[in-house]
Length: 360
Image (cartoon, rainbow, N blue to C red; front, side):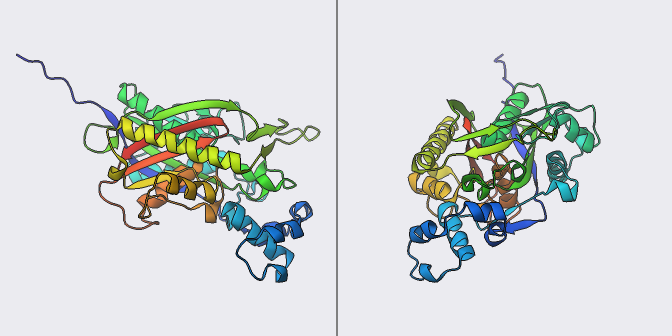
């Protein structure tokens, strides 16, 4: 008698959630800061404004707003403001996790492992997974925190898929969260205008049906410190430097981000045995509107299949993919096929790169 092999087990996304701070700061409000205003060369920016006949008539704050939109696509960003709210990165993560669990019809007690992607945890020890688990009411939940920069959410999903496919777990909660506005240098406009705060989450569960991860996620890295790096590690000591994020922009960095995310996404699509015509929705890391628009053009993805939402939130590091995925699944970007085939792709400082194909 021929032996029947058990069906292959994969992981499916059973629920998603997001948390965005209430406070939204638009470009005009950001320009009201003395350090930002002092770092901005109004006349140089005025001459760079393209396709704007009345640039000479704009007030300095209007020049700043138009310049930021032209360079990054960003109109506003969310800010947690821990000093006034008392909230931390871990608080945002816990709230996003609660919403993902609710969407999945589960409780924290149903979860086997917790993965938290962040580079702005309040504590290194205890790690953020311990803190978030306690906030979720399951202080003995196993898990760990990790930093894969802006690719962290997709790294977490890929790691969760691997654990479930191997039989190590049946349900995993993946959360990414960052309070990047607390570590930007407001004298450095490359970082001051780009970053925002937020958290995204997803519940992964074992599945053997038509929904779930298709093929192997693509993950790889390349050492390059220059594009994004952190200086100063005095998190809580007043006489030590505050950690400050620095980012180098420019055409080379933007082009590399487009090509690298496209390559990772293409690898994941081929691993899934699909063609790009089979893909319904693409969610890239929201680093810059010129990058996501460039990816759309490079892959020739017409019909609005690539989702863009950096305009309202800024670059939230790893959380951009998680937040955007939750928005899409909740209908914030229009109708979604049932089932829908998603491609998630991200590149982060370091470099870290990851992409996955998921049918939801």
